[in-house]
Image 1 (tube, rainbow over the protein chains, first blue to last red):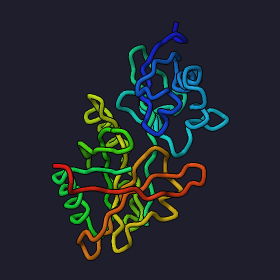
Image 2 (image 1 turned 30 degrees about the vertical axis):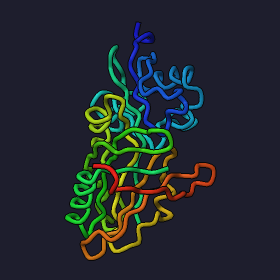
Image 3 (image 1 turned 60 degrees about the vertical axis):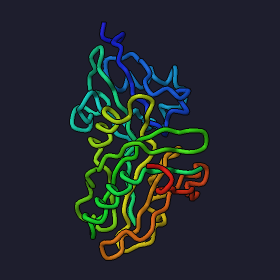
Image 4 (image 1 turned 180 degrees about the vertical axis):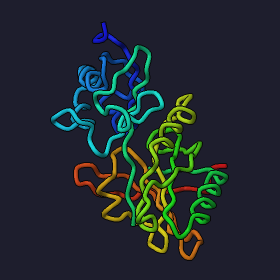
Length: 96
Length: 143
């Protein structure tokens, strides 16, 4: 049953206030979108920091499934398998 | 808060930023939070993804962040912040820096004048106002 697929989500330092300081949080789902929806249950408030209201990943957040940037896959609809690592990263940019 | 950077790592950062002049260079700081202070224990030089304005803009390649998370942020260490250069510009955060900044993250800025590092500062975001507070940067007291 794909909806019960369990993955590990790596939480970046700036968002660990939502995960009670944990860097790795298990979550269920068959796609990145479902995983983040499930993550919200244990990390209340994180979804709004990662996703737009329509579920798209925010422009200043990067998400990888294992070593793949999901912008080059199916974005939030990218499928995940049991045991995958979903890494959330802050986009780091700026300049003088 | 004091951000402590061992001298050997600081030398690597400085060499990268000076060598890359006149373009903005960037990288990742990995270490530990000890009380109010942060000790940097490893760095990863990162690719600047900006192509058209790389003299005054930077965006860290997320693949470098992924590798830093996977290979360096282990054994109790975490990605604690980032560094970047300001070529021929003061070591103070710009409006662009503040606009894209994240909380609970250290931003080290190094001014590079004519190819030589002149000043370095460290900053953390005051989240409610999306502006920075300066914190102490110590590159001398740890080896």
